[in-house]
Amino acid sequence: MTNNSSAAIYAKLQALGIALPPVATPAAAYMPFVQTGNLIFLSGHIAKKDGKPWLGQFGKNMNTEQGKLAARAVAIDLLGTLHAALAVNGKDLSHVTRIVKLMSLVNSTGDFTEQHLVTNGASELIGELFGSAGAHARSAFGVAQIPFGACVEIEMIAEVS
Image 1: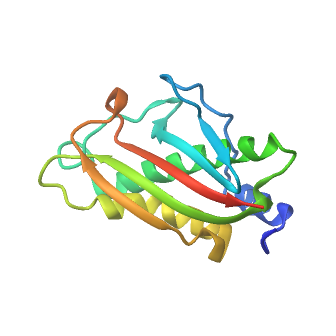
Image 2: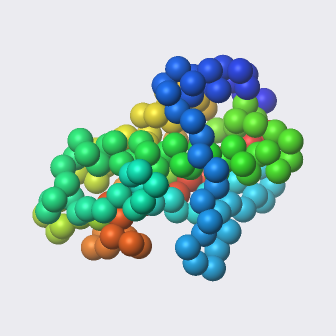
């Protein structure tokens, strides 16, 4: 187990006004998460606003600050799925030993170059919650489109005890 006690992680979430959502139903033929050994792979989660896909394209009708909020919203959904994945084995977020990697897809025009800054919205929240165990490797890509026209999609890999 990490130095993150169960109470500490969930207290941080509560202090930030974050309620973890339930696992979303997959929109196609895939699993929301798969665990192999001590790694949990979370499928890509799209940004949602008011329960619906958060639509937009950076460089066209969205700016970087809006993107950071969208990426943060995705991180909250990812954490809800990670919580559910751990609960399968009677565990909780205190069993996260490391957030290993995030991969972010940012729906953007060809001339938008701040995908890395958009993705910071997710990375900063994860770092705030998990401290040094939240420091992760990351990729951020600009793409021409994301399912449903969502502005951001992020997947995550976590190591657990």
